[in-house]
Image (cartoon, rainbow, N blue to C red; front, side, top):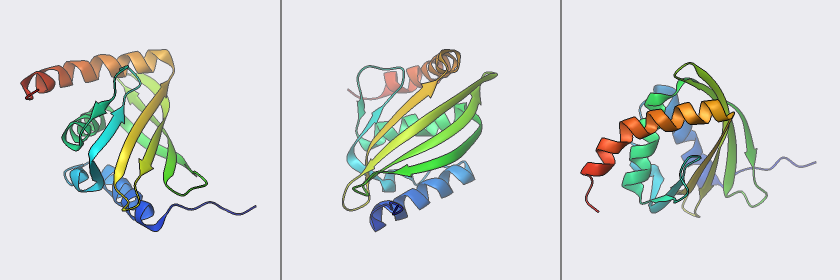
Length: 142
């Protein structure tokens, strides 16, 4: 069986993503995002669109997660997407999840979708993200 690998531009962006997460500083995340990037939340029906909003959400969630750790990386056959398995805690609740990240040909992140289990961990994350993001989203121009 042949190991699948990411397109070189996507691999470079993913390496940058891992470095940012390891430093716990997503300050240069906007450089990795396509201007029309989309974030799909595990607690919201409607996706969040646009690099500034995606950056805001990911910066906030990194602050909410405690003991965040990636465990496995799975690459799609086309080399343009990766699934990253992770674990973390939120407000004392353990959770596991996956980040599904799709890249364009230039290696920019075009879609970032998150799925989380169990329900108690997801609820704790949703409550804390809502508390932190509500004032920030209310202050943003429509």
